Image: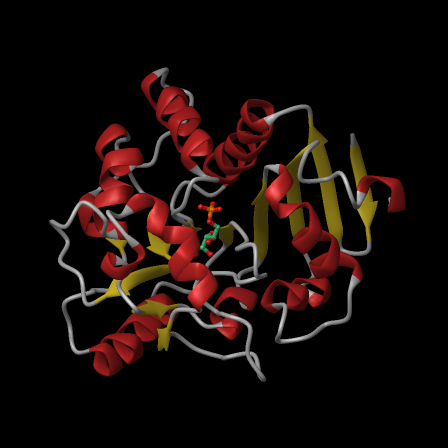
Length: 251
Ligand code: F6R
């Protein structure tokens, strides 16, 4: 199913694999038309399928990343790049080691740097690159995008933040225990994300059905950070049927 809802193009596919294929197609098309474009990337379970399909397309010679620049949304702090739980490590394992991207065009916030100086420097690097053209996003079960957690306001720029308790618990699945999850992170702000010309939001699994319903049909509220996307001029929302269960009847 593909439908327009406001500025959203909503695509619902049968399952995770098919949703990942659509997300990879959106990125592939973008790279073909903007071979020197700036891509914003995300970590987490959701984009893994998208990344493996992009790697396949690159191996098959269908897409060329050699002139693409990337900026990831976020990184834990403090964490070293060699830590296998760092987002730097994740991105190399899941995508960068498998595509023909130039490593000097790849950017993630540095989890080892002074956090405040790093946020200013990261935001400046994005600006210097001309801003993000296409930003890939997942959504947390609490509505976060990047690590912009539910709050009383929408943070504008890249900033140093504390992770929500629910995020620490959700992300503990990758660590030995919740105690091992870093308590802080560096993240693009809502303003940084919102400035992307186009957003590709991928939402899969029944655990996300309630929050995507709230984000799309609820009020625009910093307690549901993704709700700000209702105001963005160009969002492609790709879901599997399980994630779309609550919103499908409303479309
Ligand atoms: C990751 C990120 C997060 C995730 C979100 C969903 O870089 O910024 O906002 O997109 O936590 O994570 P998964 O996909 O693991 O459910």
